[in-house]
Amino acid sequence: MRFWGGTLIVWGALTGVAWADETAVQIGDAARGEQLFEQCAACHQVGEGAEHGIGPHLNGIFDRKVAQFEDFSYSEGITRARRDGMVWDLEHLDAYLNNPKVLVSGTNMEFAGLKDPQDRGDVLAYLRQFSASPQDIPEAAPTALAEEFELPPEILAIVGDPDYGEYLSTECTTCHQVDGEYDGIPVITGWYEEDFVLAMHAYKEKIRPHPVMHMMAARLSDEEIAALAAYFGALE
Image (tube, helix red, strand yellow):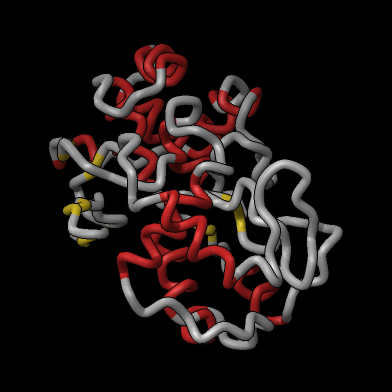
């Protein structure tokens, strides 16, 4: 549970039984964030025609895997964070803006940080405009207000067969990249199995919004969801 600019934001636990559906809720004042971003603009560009400068451009930053661009030379610290699987979700972006060197030791980003949560929320609201719209990719939405979703323990206790999951995965991989590269479609490789199961059942119950995923999840049994979770969870 966190507060963003006076707005209560409830997050689903990464490893617990509760999962919070994400909705398109403003995390701050984007207009004010644009003004605050001026102190970032010496190193980072964003918007139409943005290019790498001292730092990489920030288009599509939300839910992008760290160190995504092959044509930019990243610091050793950021490269290590990528190997560790870090993603620029809301929580990590907030922590990085607060104090870059605390989140990523060895980063080249020479910035003291924004200590005011409202300032960080406003800058992130501004940057959010240049990432995929939550209406287009709901699961990439950076905020969570939410209706909690719980599953019975017996469903969470199902042990999935990864070989069966691989057999079932062909429909998933028509959109999602098996190698874990972000191409505008959310990455599902390496998910905690419980997170995967919770998300798929939330789609199945139409709590998590996405018409295509509603259709896909509705076809799957509890055992098939567990198998897919075991398969994708084991991928690097």
